[in-house]
Image 1 (cartoon, helix red, strand yellow):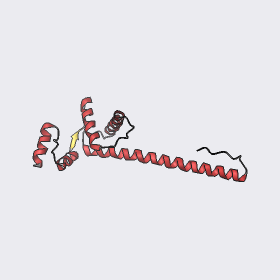
Image 2 (cartoon, one colour; image 1 turned 180 degrees about the horizontal axis):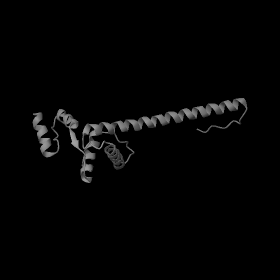
Image 3 (cartoon, helix red, strand yellow; image 1 turned 30 degrees about the vertical axis):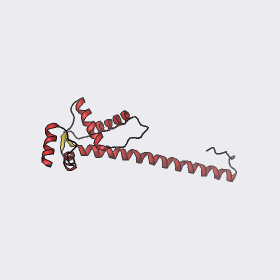
Image 4 (spheres, one colour; image 1 turned 45 degrees about the vertical axis):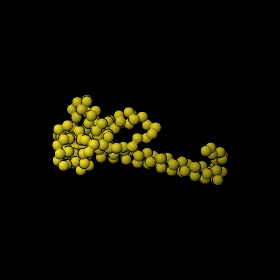
Length: 141
């Protein structure tokens, strides 16, 4: 039965709604040719973006979100070696997800660093006031 769904996907170029997950998982591991034309890139990137299933912020513009991911995919292609003309979809899907994880982690690092700097500056200001070196400033919150 799985063979039938795999064959249908190769013939039609698409999976049906009834295609078993095992067949789709196997397809993700097969090396596929990289896109050569504009429309081919659009179709290819749409397939990978939908496969990555990244959550979009409710305030974000969906088109900007997709363009950002397309930019990342184009960048990944540019960094592939000169002999790589075929790559499994899973490589790009996992890379997109990892880039999203990195973006969140980097934002958290900046928040933690900025909060630590603010605490340190407040502590130093308190110490100066306690020593009488600087006039007391009113803290606005």
